Image (cartoon, rainbow, N blue to C red; front, side, top):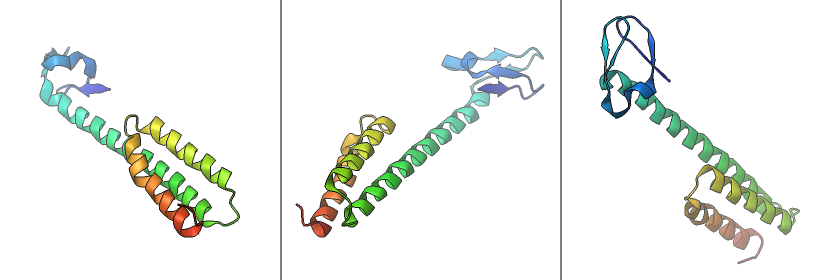
Length: 120
């Protein structure tokens, strides 16, 4: 990512500004932490978007499992495979947060199985 000099428009690598360093551009302008902060904000926004997209992916997969549970023609083994796929994808997208999957989706799957498949 580049930080743009406000005076001349020349680009400087954001890594040059680590630890609060100030950089003097070739045009003579000083570029400091204040010029870098908007780029860090963009990074946080992009991370949040990635989290939202990942959560939406998990939600779509879980909705598919719910549809399978409600479908009387779906085999139990296929449902289990689908649940494992959702669990694995959740672990890949949200490392260290598998407990949330179990709390939210496992309980939903259990409830639906009990209600529509007589399991539980």
